[in-house]
Image (cartoon, rainbow, N blue to C red; front, side, top):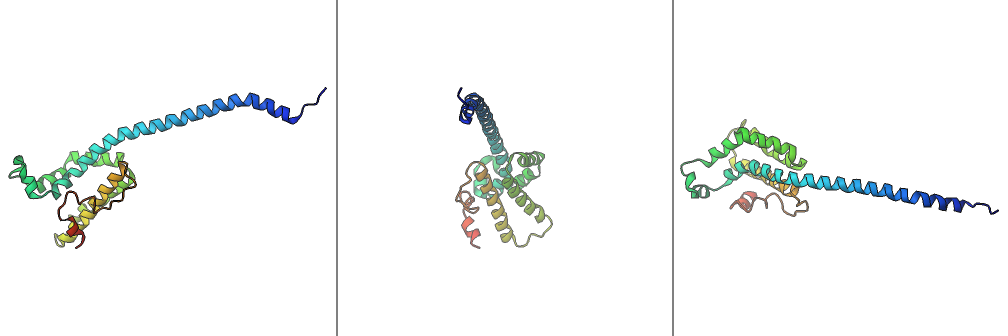
Length: 180
């Protein structure tokens, strides 16, 4: 009678364990794939929600930085103050709801940039109107940083743009302000 060698036992164990091992790996792979699919599905749902929230959050700033000529070009805006409308939007309950929603759906960097911008505005209520050119520059830097973080959160993480370049498309004198 031939004596069993340890290699025979290992081969027998491998024959029994292989299907079990394949089954476990398949199950883990399926679970991992489902997790990735769920995360991607959630990201797709959040993307649309984020876009809508970002649009509401940015609207008052767009109004504030719009030229008076562009504002008056729309006939329904005649005899209306764009600044008063923008400030009214910033102070509205709907805007506060959108800001709350932003804190829930936006990534951390967007929320932090928005916080910095809003803290700047809150601090302006406590100060005089002096040094308005410097305040405008600071506000533009903060707004540009918010726009840049929003851009990154929408999938452009490797962007080469800076916060000033994020403002150039809608402000004619942003380069002049940057260099002062």
